[in-house]
Image 1: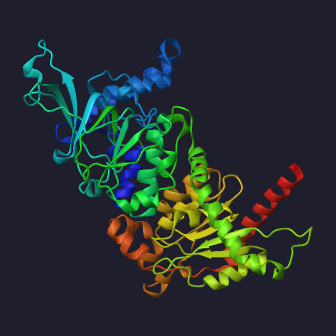
Image 2 (image 1 turned 180 degrees about the vertical axis):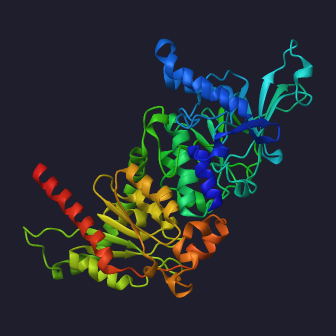
Image 3 (image 1 turned 90 degrees about the vertical axis):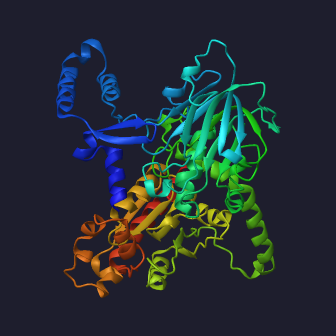
Length: 512
């Protein structure tokens, strides 16, 4: 949890140390250096002057932007991300490599010109015509004009996982007559190069670190783009086979497994990421939002879902006459899906929860996603639901499959997971337009009450345990904790969800 808190501090500028750090780029990457106090004093003085003089010369937001650049500090309001072609690299010329390394979440590099892949050396070359006026002393290594290194994964701030990501060399070179420049495959559309390594295999990270950033980065090309994947996994391509064709009209390339030379005229290496499970329209060229991404999911899964529904109807057609018909004025019950867990963070009295929800008036479906469960089947279940209940964990990512503005997401929050539950799922769910209800369990609802003394910090002060490090959080609160809901207390959330849903249905009927 320490790494998550540190990430949040860097993101929000929320501690004194982060506020006085300067991030300096060297040939080995960023290192952090404390800004001298005199500079901090000077910054405050200039800000004070900015308040007084701003009306006469420039806007205060503009002043902050210039001061941020001067002191080497990123203005969080800008987040270092303005559209997919950031201002730093927006006017890249032919034959150039430009890397934007300002954002703490990810690096991204742009290349334009004669671009050729070379997987044996983990390199992408950009060849420039040899110019007799070039100064040989300006080259990096012989005919090299520029050499950038990048790990195209969106968790740059998390050094442990970034150590597992393959590094790619982006090299600008002079074209010499004795170099073989033959292209095995010529592409007339740009490339987007990224990695599916890291935490891929966890559905939260697959969407947060991969699919959504891929949407953000590639949306501007309107599917006229080729995906080049480092640490390529066949199962990942199959799992997201419904979505990928809506982002690219071309089959993805396995960078490490395909030794052919692929040639492009433009390439982006790395992906943009805005925040947890979201798309910030102010950072998108055409103001797309997370709702637009959700609409893409609907287009992607609709054909498969239609097929699944038709198959289910065919199986039940023989029993259709035996099913009692709903009366004309009988209202359809709101559908509630409970995402069930086995092992840790399971709801141990789930059967009682189902009965309580049914008594209120819900039609309850229990869904237990497995790693091999087809995403289209999960989408079909949640897209047709009115409410979802689940205990904090990666499966909560499936709130993305719910309908905005008319669905309720109830997240059960075990002890010690408050920050993660809100940051990773609560806030993103609101941005999607869901009615979000967080239910923080009491100590007596946690199975940990049977393992620890009532005055133990594990129960009384979870934040102190979280501050010891992620391993403590994981071992105690994520891997060894189950939940027994207090149904008297939880029933209030069920009633709130039911009233919200039925109110929306009544409003829809009046409008119709």
